[in-house]
Length: 279
Image 1: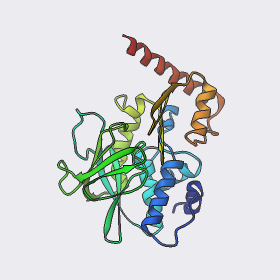
Image 2: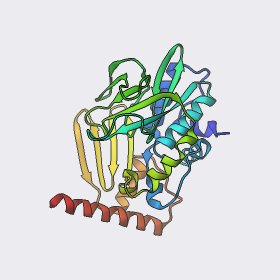
Image 3: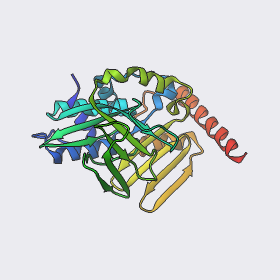
């Protein structure tokens, strides 16, 4: 069982009377605006699971997560609200060198409604603001343009291409339904391997109708129709204020020593990155 009422309260959305496209759009918008994509628990040394009930409980407590948490929870909520939801094995390509296809490092959702299928993805790191129909076309949402097309790498699946200013290039997902538990081993790898981007860099991201806010380490960016505004955060107090204010994250369960240690490690990593950039 999941806490549906608590979840909807976080989203600020009333329980839909019926599973409609309009309600799906409203739920999706609220989710990406109010629940951050973030990996802070990895950097706090707090292992998490990806079970839907656990992820919903995290969200109700004022936290977020990455795709396995966010889409796992959102898929469970939509199912509880009467939507026909399918979970898919997917893969995200961050650079041109990355191999296309559904490598399993991402969980994608589709919803079948009124004879049409929709890509529903609240875990795409500042990706879509609203669901996209599975129709080959370009789509504009706010300042960003996306594309949907049949996947060449995953026959029967689909490929989502991100705006060039996005945090990644594209995402392919396979057509076959999968269980959330099938991502458990990949979750362990992504959250523990020194080679994982989630382990190397702390991030928080939040999408809204006009753009996206992105925190990577100490660097905060706002990307919108006006371009990209970037600044470096130099103090722990400001950094935690940004996490609470911009990203709506409740870190009240992190005590003062843990906060100090986390900031020290994030700042040290930033200074190391700056030194490497100067070489």
